[in-house]
Length: 436
Image 1 (tube, rainbow, N blue to C red):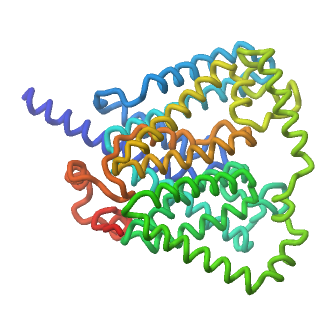
Image 2 (cartoon, rainbow, N blue to C red; image 1 turned 45 degrees about the horizontal axis):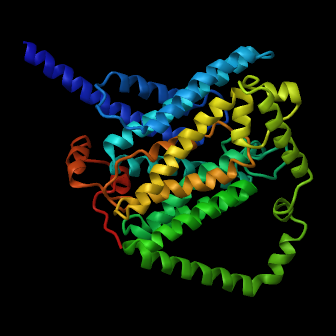
């Protein structure tokens, strides 16, 4: 009877483990819709987290000591900042709760990729990409004015200028697309099964990112693509298809520009895109606000409390680290920097090891490097995908292609699949893929 009870408990725990993993992937897919608070992705995450707590967690430390120190500083001084709140305490308390949620998202991602490895890497990025494609499709419908009240998908009341789709701001929507753009570009040059999917998705997402007219997101994707492009060229297997895609793409752009240069110049002259690519009237005040915020941060090293800058100074600094340090304190900002640098440092060391799995770490490094530049001009703190990508850095990978799953994982992965998977699962599954 005891053995039967133990068997039932083990079976239930295994099901809870599988369920928590699948709910987590659903959470990542739903991360494209954050127009309302709390967003559906947040509610789903905590359901999955509750299921994960019902399972026996696999042993072994999956974070470096440097990252652990960062997490501790981040959380302790986020709570400590509440003692300095003067206005809207409930709003500030909610902000600190969100910081705990962001860290949980980071830790759960790091846990899954540390124990599921290459399998988790593929499915996490595929879930993010499918969500990004849904958001991009809604964006295309809004651009074509094919949905009722399409103005709500643009920034500004009744003004159809910068596309934000299912997000609250173009400067959040644009960076959210970048990991999916890199992933689909990688599929396009490395996977036979997903080559068409990668090419079509890459084009769709890139056009929508441009439609956000977010200068920071454009620089972000350009830097990330450049770094990852170099990594793919260095890697023997993907070097030739990557070079051919670059050659064909560059040739097509040159041909289009040569034939339609006058039309392009006329279309850009006086357009919103041209104005967005130039200096804006508020750029000088933006950088002066960052400078004054640094001074306020040094005067209040323990922070002024979440959301207090807007009430006290009438502005928010357009720099993520400065904004975090001003509100939560310099030690909390150091904690955020610890987490970020630990992720980038681990990826960089894995890249220079010249092992096959280095390409996956190069992917994460490229996204984080571009995002680091963006953080200097955007003051958004709660980028969900940033914490997910930081978590990807702590994975244990052994293969170099995005759809490769080693044999030691494949049997377990197949065991939890339905016996007769549906058409969609067969199409999305990495099983049966081959590489260039």
